Image (tube, rainbow, N blue to C red):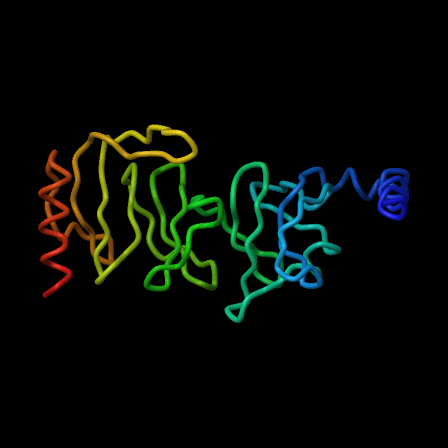
Length: 188
């Protein structure tokens, strides 16, 4: 504790800490997978997040070369070189990769990223579910409503897209009928 306080004081005195003004949660590779919150972990620069090299080097990366990191703005997947993308929060962690893709939000709508953190598919939909069987349920004009520590997606018109973003099942106001048709389409 004393060493940490001294390092923080030194960083503030030299101006290094102010360069990284965001805290983050990450799993330290020496900490047995436990997530810890640290100050001065990252900063925003030109619309991107830049991680403090001290913490980037300590992140526990998986076999796919990615590490999860939680910032004030939400969860991100991070590569060893520091490149990261913001993804949805799912069950208090970053959105998992389903069929090789994780979901994120963009100003124009929902997006899907691959494990190299490349944008694979940008959509104009208000909500998009993970791909399963090559299809993903999507909706327009739906609203995300907080419900306790979780959220529900309500209203709107629902359809399904394929991996190229083409509408594979038409939009309709009835989400339940879409779910039945989607289940049948995935079983084919």
